[in-house]
Image 1 (cartoon, rainbow, N blue to C red):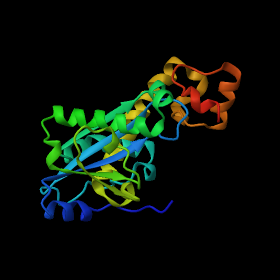
Image 2 (cartoon, rainbow, N blue to C red):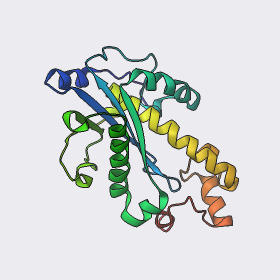
Image 3 (cartoon, rainbow, N blue to C red):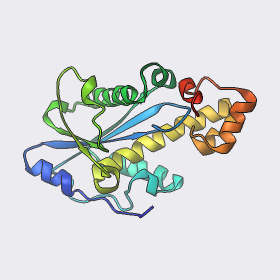
Image 4 (cartoon, helix red, strand yellow):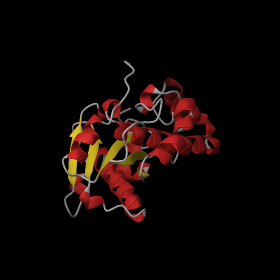
Length: 213
């Protein structure tokens, strides 16, 4: 994987076009077979003209570096939040709808922090808008392929979401250590799949995913 430093170029362009702020959004845990799916959000505005040293897409950072960056990122952004959808919700409504649900919950947390969400622009990593179908009132949602690599707000959201979800999976590991969630974080490693074969699924597994795994 090529290591790239994100910029605020797109966010600055959108803010220069009249948006008071941009909400960077990124999902974590989409491909896992256990644990929740998480959507992180990070808000930047015109006061953000530089980015924290070392900020990158969470996949380009070591676990130690990601964890160290979280307080830096949280103090840098205007607001941040992580929304979750549980394994059972992923089973019940499917992964795309679960992503939308998690994103909607993250927006609710930003609203509770006093952010006037409807006046800003939401910038989603990827090419698919999974958020809009969940909304009662439309928001200005834009998608950006490789946004987690290129856009600082999305990179910040990815770091916050990744560390939040990893922390939850480590806590689950303490309850059911056989599956190795401390290391695999719910993804389908060889050791994880063998533990399922030997012990069966746990409550944190996405049962519908195990049928095709």
